[in-house]
Image (cartoon, rainbow, N blue to C red; front, side, top):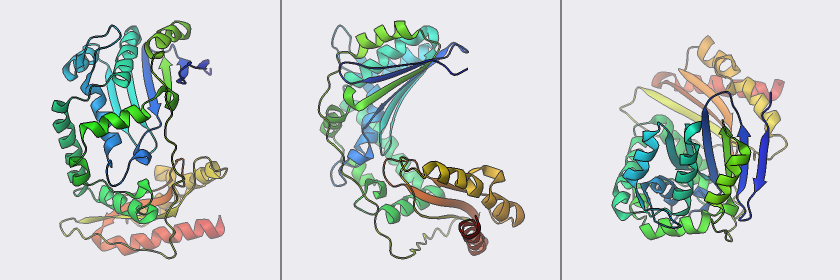
Length: 340
C-alpha cells in the first residue's frame, strides 16, 4: 500500500514531508538546501559549497540551552547508536542526511538541528577537509572516466556556466573560514530548504519535535540564481586526452539534453532506456559489447537538472579498439534517430 504522506510548512518557511513506514524499525532524515555549485563565484568561491557541507559535522556552537559540540562529540553520538550522519553538495543543492533505528529518532532531530543552525566551522578542522578535497582532485588524474567527464562538461557547458567549471587545487587552497560562514549564512535558511523523513515514526508526535527543533531557525531573503545557459556549439568538437600509461580508454560523447521540467523528459528517458539506459538489455550494450566485444561497459543517460542538462554516452575499451567502438556506438544512435 502507498504510505500516508504528512506535509506542512513551518512559519519560518521550512517545508516538511513525513512518510510513515512501519515495516522496519528504522528512520531516515534528509534535508536539501538550494545551495550548491550554481551559487558559487568562479574567481573567489569555487568549491565552497562542498567545503561547507563537509564542515557541518565538524563542530557546533552553544546556544538555546545546548552545549557546544566538537567533531568528536558529534561522531561519538551518532556512532554510539550505529547511525549515519553525512553532508554533501552538488550543483543544485546541498544535503544533510541522518539515519538511525527508530528508537533513536530524537538523536537525528537533535543533530540535524544543531549542525544546520549552529555550525562553528572550527579552523583546526579545515586542514583535514581541505586535504580530503585535494586528494579527490588528485585522484581524478588516475581515473579516465573522471578526467573525461571534467573535459566533457567544460566543453559542453562552457566557462559561463557553473556546470562547466573545473575545480582546481588552487581553488581549494584559497577557501577561507570567512567564505564558509558567509555561504552558510546566505543560503542555509529554512525558507530555502526541504526536510523529508521516512520510516517508523509517529507523524503527529514527530511534528511537535521538529517544530521545537527547527522553529527558531531564522528565515531570510536568499539571492536568486541567474538563468545559466549552455555554450553554443556550432560544430562537432573532438578532444583527445593522452594518457600513455593506460591500456584502455574512456569514450565520452554527447550534446545538449533537457531540463528535468521539460515535457519531453520522461519520453526521452523511456527512449534512452532502450538505447543505453538499461544495462545489459540496452541496444548499445547488446551491439557494442555482446555482439562485437568492443567494450567492458557502455551506457547512455540524460541528466535531470534545473537547467539544460546533457545527453551523453560513456564507454570503456582497449586502446586498439577505440575507433571501432566509437563508430559502432554512433551508428546505433543514428539508427535510433532515423528508424525509431
